[in-house]
Length: 199
Image (cartoon, rainbow, N blue to C red; front, side, top):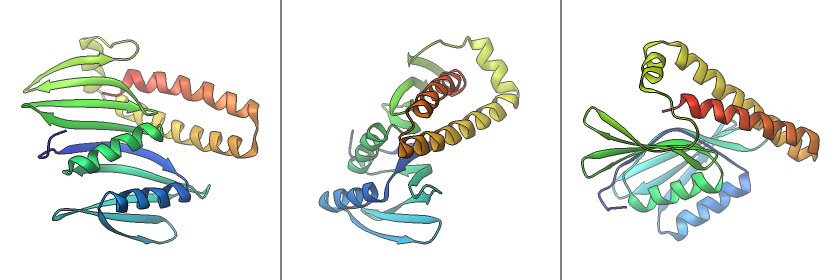
């Protein structure tokens, strides 16, 4: 990754325990970043200084006592961007990552820490470099974008994934192997559906 990079993370969603967040803070400090944090009953906000810029990472507190880092972020620091991408993989998180490279935009769709689609955008042209699973035809993509139904279905699917992840966490905490298996099966089905819809 070059020094003058700008990486945009859209629809980022990562989940952490409080201890994991403490370790993240230690890692950032050991990497030489200046940072501070504030917390209330809903959010823990971690502010990381990168040169003259301040990146505010917002961790939402969940009912389970864990935290969710969600939202859209633009990172202009190569080292911090690399750190965040490793974090997406290690936490099996979700994100759409956009980066400009040689007058092209590369868009990665990451689901459960794995790149499921890589698209190169040049001007008005798009070229799918990598696609995990079935590829939609150009007409199917066009029809989906022309209607609002696709957006609504995508939103509902993401809400279902959130609910299922909460159920999985509870099942894992309780040690209920049957429920854990059911959650994994349901999440796999939902991930295939998301794969078909997300760009």
